Every structure is written in C-alpha cells, then in structure tokens.
Length: 62
Image 1 (tube, rainbow, N blue to C red):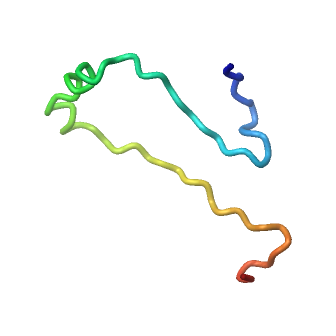
Image 2 (image 1 turned 60 degrees about the vertical axis):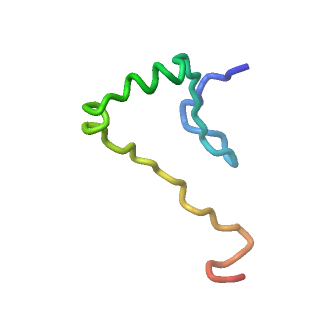
C-alpha cells in the first residue's frame, strides 16, 4: 500500500526513496532511445545525502 508523500520530507531516521512502475516492454524502451535521443541526453544529477554524525561521538573519534 502506497502512502502519500510527506509534506516536510521523510520522517526522522528514514531516507527518501522514489520508485516507478515500468509500463513499456524492453523492446519499446530500446526503440525509444534512438541515436538522436542518445546524443541529446543529459545525465541526471544525483544528490547523495551527507554522512550523518553519531551523536555520542566527536568528529574524528574512531
């Protein structure tokens, strides 16, 4: 069961995740990506979360 997205982002302690259903066959997807479309495609920007500090530790402690 899907839940509506949170208005203020994911709850504390949870990472945001997105997904989608693929409705095209592999053949349809391959047919879409013509040489012209591939030449004009731009990479998607991927934003990675910053590493979280453990609250009981000081930065640099191992």
